[in-house]
Each structure stands twice: as structure tokens, then as C-alpha cells.
Image (cartoon, rainbow, N blue to C red; front, top):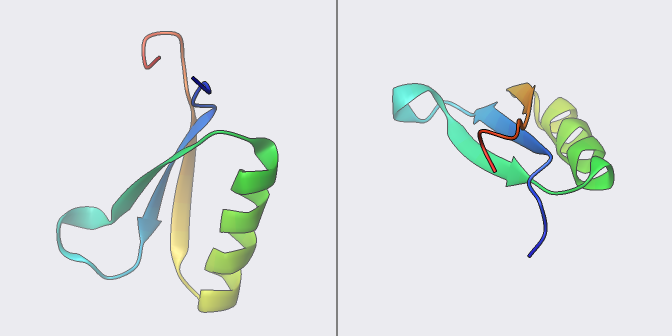
Length: 53
């Protein structure tokens, strides 16, 4: 089973803050950042720790 590398919150105007995503690779993180920038939405990124896994 793949390990989660990052947790990303996408602030896309939904109630209660945003939409959470588990990200498994650096390439996936870069894709999400690019798509968020193109869509004009804000995201926050947190690196997963051993406690999260």
C-alpha cells in the first residue's frame, strides 16, 4: 500500500474550510498545485509524519 507523503487542503469555497486530499507522490502534489493556481483557488500543504501513517 502506498504511503501518504502530503496532506493537501483545497479551499474551493465549500463549507467547513475546504476539501482534504491525501497525496502519495511529489508529481501528484505538483499537479494539484498547478491545477489550483489555474483555477484560482488556494491550497495548503502539510507533509505527512510517522504519526499520520
